[in-house]
Image: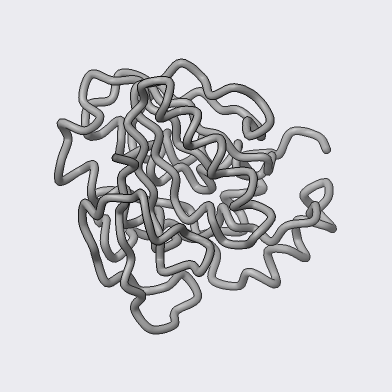
Length: 212
């Protein structure tokens, strides 16, 4: 589909600060269904997936909070934000001192959202990429993956990629709001937060895991 206009994104969202990460502003949608319809009629096509980029999901909020509280994790390092969505984690990584961030997401709306949100927060240095999961991991020092194990198919693609990145020497962190497909072994808990869900539901216990 054609490149998404920043003007379209700004017209159909509002700016807000995620509850757990008030240091970052994001363009978010109050009416996801209405936004999805506008994407189809005005934005050049909605695609197959809902506008995940228009919300601050618990997994991403937990990772962003963690790197802001522990900047030594990313400071002076090259970072991959896998499943970047809004770019929340990418922005937080730059705020925490990362030298460069590669933000990966297959959704072209996400690519525009990342650029717009980076500008909103006054950060630079985010390179945007599409789906990387069928390739070798890029040359980065840290991988931050927010809520990427949300179904069986995606988990089957993500876990080998994260394992390959870890074997290649990257530090790998996973933000997980209690998904059933996240493995129960082989991960080290780094932090846990109660995060209000993006749909306004009750807070979810969300854990930042690290591959050992």
